[in-house]
Amino acid sequence: MNVRNLCKLLFLSVAAAAMAACAPATVKEINANRSGYVEANFSQKQIPEGVARALNKNGTPVLNFKTARIKMNAVYASRTSKEQTPTVTLALRNLGDGYILRLEEYESNGIAYGSQYSISHGGVLKLRDQDIFYSRAYAGQLFEVKELTAYPGDVSNPGEHSTYLYEWQEGAHHQIANFTSMKMICSTGKFYEASSLFSELKGKAIDFNCERLVDGITRAKQKFALLMEFGIVILLEYQSAVNKNTHTIVGVEIQ
Image 1 (cartoon, one colour):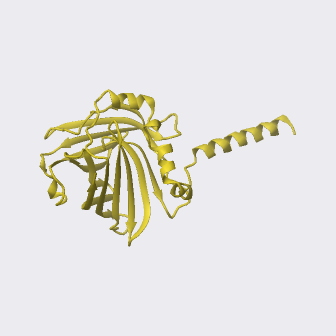
Image 2 (image 1 turned 180 degrees about the vertical axis):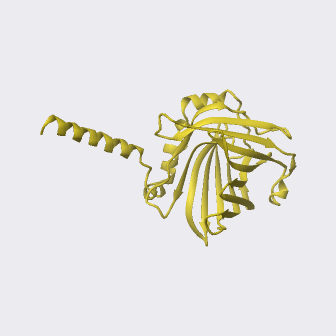
Image 3 (image 1 turned 30 degrees about the horizontal axis):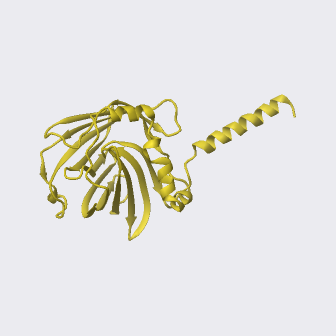
């Protein structure tokens, strides 16, 4: 074998290894060991060091729960496809130090068809997230916050009519350059009774109305509700140029 062919083989071997390292896990592998996958990809250990430092110096959100399970009826409307009405089950776990592990699972006609794993600090900004659709061979790409350039800190006790700025660089977990510039500007409304969201909820709630920008261009608007008694943040509405999603709470279990 001449040197040129040897170099080609070496290059192809390195490229194949790199592609294998970047490829998402298979759906079969994830569902066979969910707890192991979560521990390996959605714990505080995976948060980039610089991001963790920025989070820690801005206060720790007050989380008054250990686990929570929230069931919601959803309406997903799109300009490009038929309206869908899945049931969404949101499972939350307090990991300590303000971190929240989140699993959303979607089902239609009583059959689960997909989920999203994520970890956040306080619940508004996802630090790592990944979509998984059970009909596909591979999970979606795992995205993460690479750098925080603006972070409001602890928003578990916000003021009425206040504004909070989140600004960060985002990329796939294996990506090392050419990140996407992201920004979210959130404004709160007035406090109201949490029972208006679901009859069994106690205490007050407040809405965060957020505008999400990608590379300086508005791409989506979101409305979150913060349950003050627990420090739990729930996405109520999401709207882009193509989609409009709404969630209505129909069941709550909080410990």
